[in-house]
Image 1 (cartoon, rainbow, N blue to C red):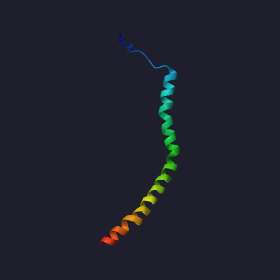
Image 2: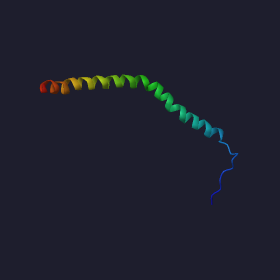
Image 3: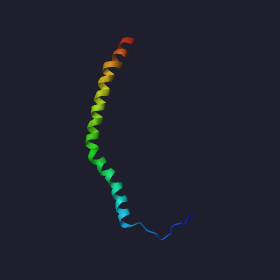
Image 4: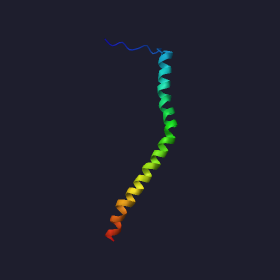
Length: 64
């Protein structure tokens, strides 16, 4: 039924290489995409600021 693996078992080198590459690859993609992500956040921030100035500020000014 259930047979536990011996405590001395090790990973095959192929599996270890796959595990390392699957760990490092997202980090590399994140570092490469950081510049695009930063510029995207700037665009979203500018859009939110103009939305606030166009909608919320006139409402706040009219209530005074």
